Image (cartoon, rainbow, N blue to C red; front, side, top):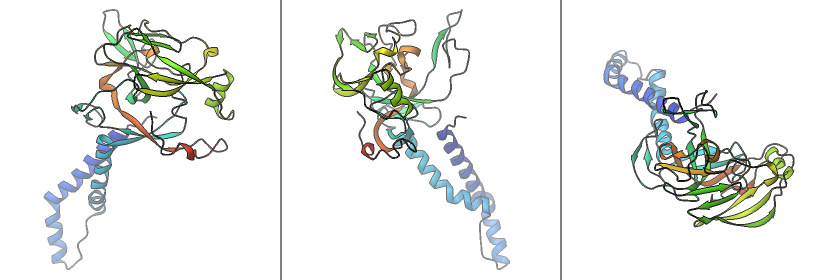
Length: 296
């Protein structure tokens, strides 16, 4: 089951605020006077006492998660080697503008994603075209299931208006190839599923120079080809209001090459820090060397 914590926090904030507020407006004075006349010490009823105590706490957490920073956990290896499975990261929620909780509507514009940014976004699903030409989105390539409410994380490759070509790991942006320098073979723990996948396909690690950002990527050409760009879902020119995003584990990432561009309206924020890394019992435990690492 998927939980929308922003919706839960918003609901709790409203619930506690309504209980506390209505009590203070309509019941508090009468109850206080009644207890005072009976010579008893005043105490709020349990629901009111809990609401009064928890309302400011939940409100502060909601505001911090909505407008300042929100924690996320990396569930898959699509961003390896930059982000590992089990990394806990912080996301800057105001890097690209202030947005309302739940609806994600932008209310204050601050900035836009830059090439090379690692962004968290609400997965838009696959783009499909119905017989009448209407554009729909679904959770599978045929758009027969609803789009799950999932937060995804990828790297921005193409900006609105860019002309993009992708052939496996080779990226050409506005006619210029993206340069990458080989670092060496991937070295990991074969007991970990995602590490073992990379090692079984003889993955190599590269330094990719993407605009002003230099970052690591993994290549597994032995695993087989990935969808090229342009394709049926991705035009060669990135549409306005959209971004082309890809994972750093290039042959193990379901990204814009498969489902299309990531709309600006789906943005949640910019990933900037690993604050904890848990590799699992018996497969590394806490990754102390990753804690405090900035995300580039």
